[in-house]
Structures are given as C-alpha cells and as structure tokens.
Length: 381
Ligand code: SF4
Image 1: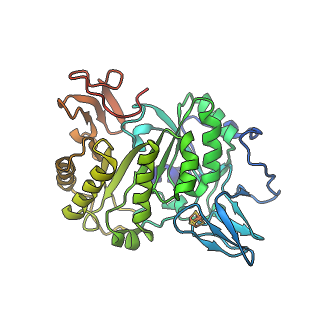
Image 2: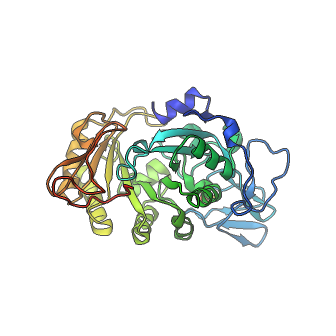
Image 3: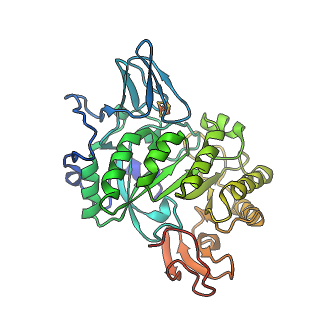
C-alpha cells in the first residue's frame, strides 16, 4: 500500500505494525530531554524550544535550520508551519508528537544498501519546507500540527516501541524530517546510544550546521533529488536546487551513507540531457558507488493530468546513468523488474535479488560478492 493510502485508511493518524498508543508513553530521560515544560492545554502540538535560530530586533527571529532562513515576527510561523515565534523566542510545535508511526521494510524508504530486509520504525509529523506538487504525503506535509491528528510519542516512548517490536532501525520519513529537527535529534541521540540505527529520508533542504550536528547519530541519509534544474525546483517545489547539492556534498564529506532518489515525471523532468547532467554531477562529486533510485511517477496531489512514467523511459535513463559510470542504479515502483536487484559491478553476479520491497535472495558474503569477492559498499552488518 502506498504511504498515502495507509495514512488515509487510518484517518491520518496511523499506528500500525502491531504498535499501540500505550507503547508510546514514557517520560524523556534527563539526558535526552529538552529541559522544557510545555504549557497545559495546548492539544495537538508538542511545544519545545527550537534550535538553530537567531534573535533579531523587534522580537523577530531568523530560522537557520533550512535554506529558506525564514524571518519570523512575533506570533507568526515559518514557511513550514511547525515553528513559531512566541515573544521573540522560537519554538517547534511538533516535539514529541507523531501523526504517523508504522513498521516498514527498509527497502520501502528506499535504502537498498542498508541492512537489507530490516524492519524500520517509521515516523512523521506535520509540515514541510517544500511544497512539491507531486507530494505523495501531502495530507500531512502540507498541513499544520493542529490540522493533523497526532499522538504523544516522546523519544523514550519511541525507543520502547522499537524494542517491543524488535525493530533495529528508526526511520524519519513521510514528511520532511528537517522540520521536526529537535524531535529527530532527541530520538536519534536516545536510540543510537542504545544500539539502534537511525536513517533520514529527506529532500536535502537543510543547512550545513544542523546537518553536521545530527550526523553522528545517524547511519544513513536518503535525499530526494527532485530534478537537475532550478526551474523545476522553483515551479514544482517552491524551492531551489543548489542547497540540495550542497547537502549531498556535505554528506559525502561526513562519510555518511547516502542514497539518492529521483522521481521521474513525464514531460517535467524526464529529458535525457538534464538527467545525464545530473548523473555526471553525482559521478564527479559523490563517486560511482552512490545508489541511485529512479522512481516511477503515479499521479497525485496537484499533478493529476500526467500518465504514469512509461517503463521504457525509466530504462533509458537507467542506461544513461550506467553509461555515465554509476555502479548501482535501480528502478522503483516497477515490481518484478530486473533493475530492483543489486549486481556486482565487476562480474555481474546478482548479489541481492529483490521483488518490490522484499529481499528474495541475499548472496552477499560479509559485504562481498560471492563470485569475485569484490567489496560492495553499504551498511551490511
Ligand atoms: S525550517 Fe521552517 S521555519 Fe525554518 S527556515 Fe525552514 S521553512 Fe523556515
């Protein structure tokens, strides 16, 4: 089931995968909690002090979390709708509350080179710092916290939920995790210290400083590279491309495992020239071993007039990415296609065989090809 369908089926407040709300209770530990007592009576929001902002004269603040750098007056909110100026102090409104929590296979994120077959406790809040016209999760990403049902889920509660469901990975996903940065950081701190892995599924719209502060608690980062033109970002996402490329370079410098997803939309970003330029940029700046997922578009949100991406279009772009030298290129949303599997770039052995989000055969031996012993990059153990 698509994320949107799942959320819709549960009225926007999703508790699935055997989870129950009682698992999400529990107090913050002194170590992990933000030292703040939220006021009583404000339902549906999780108020806590924001990080990464600057105070300005006249009770204004400038948010330094993402490239938008919203300048926010008293009693106003930033573009993402989940960060508010109260008397010259800045607050997140989504700390400790989730509107969607579910156990997914890690392949659904998608991560294909991170713990294949692992279950990931996946959570989201309201809000986003982009407005993509093709957003699959617009019912939560394009709304404010008060407009989306949510449940209390402090970091210790999320840790308990992961343990009780025997889930080794926490995934921050569905909406843009940057906008719930303080909550994400607290959970990642609490859970990574207890041996869990944390992975972020992001649009890459985050400033370098908060990213570097968060990175030590993470195992992997997935970036949606929406297209390779500023025009597409401006017209389809109300955003800009350059900061996303900066984020990818920062992730490379941090050595944090990164995978890239490109949703290929007919007529909007499926041309060969701009995609070839993108693949060449990835090769030059990130190297040949970054997994690249080319996803098939299905109509949604504000783009309902375009057909599903033809599979031959995806196959042509797949061939171009390989021509440009990328070693691990996948097709997404095409269940059963050969390009869902991982192949050794040296001898061609199919080292991980997948169908959709399911790993059917795992042939890697300690991260190496069983035929030629080439090390396949990723997080395997
Ligand atoms: S995180 Fe939100 S408030 Fe901060 S700059 Fe980005 S859009 Fe604006």
